[in-house]
Figure 1: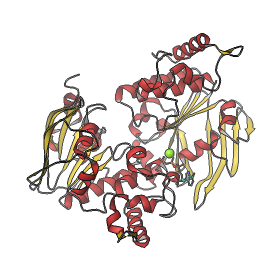
Figure 2 (figure 1 turned 90 degrees about the vertical axis):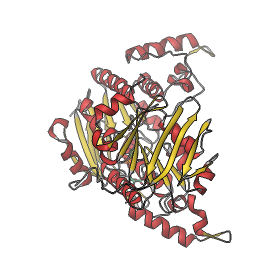
Figure 3 (figure 1 turned 45 degrees about the horizontal axis):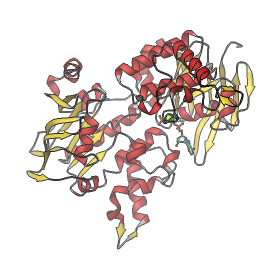
Figure 4 (figure 1 turned 90 degrees about the horizontal axis):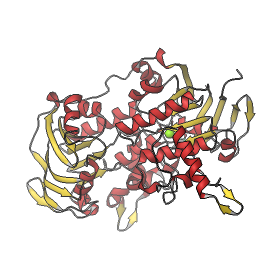
Amino acid sequence: MDDLLVQLVEISKTFPGVKALDHVSLDLRPGEVHALIGENGSGKSTLMKILSGVYIKDEGKVIVNGKEMNFQKPRDAQDAGIAIIHQELNLCRHLTVAENIFLGREFQNGIFLDKKHQIEEAQKILDRLEVNLDPNSRVSELTVSKQQMVEIAKAISANANVVIMDEPTSALTIKEIDDLFSIIKVLRKQGKGIIYITHRLEELNAITDRITIIRDGQHIITTDFKNLSADDIIRYMVGRELKEKFPRIQMPVGKTIFEVKNLSAGKAVRDVSFTVREGEILGIAGLMGAGRTETVRAIFGADKKDSGQLILNGQEIRIDKPQEAIETGIFCVPEDRKRDGLCISMPVYQNATLPNMEKVTHRGIVNTKKEIMIAENMVKQLTIHTPSVFQIVKNLSGGNQQKIVVGKWLVKPAHVILFDEPTRGIDVGAKVDIYNLMNQLKEQGIGVVFVSSELPEILGMADRIVVMCEGRVTAELDADEANQEIIMQYATQYM
Ligand SMILES: Nc1ncnc2c1ncn2[C@@H]1O[C@H](COP(=O)(O)OP(=O)(O)OP(=O)(O)O)[C@@H](O)[C@H]1O
Ligand SMILES: [Mg+2]
């Protein structure tokens, strides 16, 4: 077909020890949103990196507007009208919106930069996207979603006909997701093709025309989105029926393990109190910006506390830095894994034992054998897809990196574990692995605090739910008296 924007034909790609793609095909029509769906490590990002010139394919054909291409670098793909918006945004934070949009393609008047012209052109592009943004504002002052819009504007300014979005919504609020969808609809009306990757299957309804599902580097199905039910999608993704999305276990609730009393920290945490008890998972719900991450960070000692008390097993404790939290048995699985959770240029086995060095060190000498054993256990327990524990973490898929962030705390005796959005970017099957892990901790009498923006998983897994809004606790609910409407009501109480 001549009118296809892109045809990827039987693409294969092998990394050492991993066949990431095995003869995968996908095409893109003008004006369509084509969802690319699959488990962590199934090859989605790899396929898109081949289309955008980041990786070079081993086999297969890349055809753009009917012409076979042989991309050797990202610039080749850009010149062919293909733009990719990676999950980690690539903007220069200290430059303005206009400067970022035209980075490397600045408007010149002789040898001088034609600032005025550049700002006018940037404004035109933003208008075309129907985005309300000042071309003069500095990118560092924008929210993540606005930054993402700058990325999209940059793509459009380079005359891209194909826009690839790799998990664009994982850090956006509900309102921001709406804004992104409006832009997607504008692009679609202009006849551009969009390839859209996400693990939040609920959001597909709003925008998807066609869907392609891949599994273990193989093409499973391409069809009109309306032909598949949510259960069909999951079945094609994981290759089996998923018995229970939320494997809740019921247990008698025991004594109070941990108490947070009147905690305040900066503007984001105001007089927060809650308790964590034996045999339960305490959920903390709220919208993005409600102060949940800041609460967790203040407890863990990553941010300064202004006032308040922490009580562990009846005794007041003091935590001024993370090291002290770890020493008292309070651990945190952070939200931002790249920044706080992983050494991405180190192999899996060294990351697995990072918080646990004393267990594998004897008289200052690291027992590598023991390290490897611990890591191998973790890989098995969490079904982490990696050719071996010697793989560099950077080379794992996003979701599998997240599993390591979670897994590395589980080898160490704990009193309380604070999980901040532990399933972000994780596929449906792997989410169940993480829930089961939280269940195991609950059975062992460890205090589990589970912060999440996804109401279904909070309702599905938490036994008690604390709701926050604007830095304050607005409600504490038993799981059986809570539902989405009630939580949303409290989550927006002061808005
Ligand atoms: N540069 C690399 N070196 C070695 N292996 C790699 C590299 N990039 C990807 N892989 C491997 O290729 C496979 C596919 O990874 P890819 O990132 O495409 O998955 P994905 O579908 O995007 O997953 P996720 O949903 O977790 O982001 C994985 O097994 C991954 O570990
Ligand atoms: Mg990916």
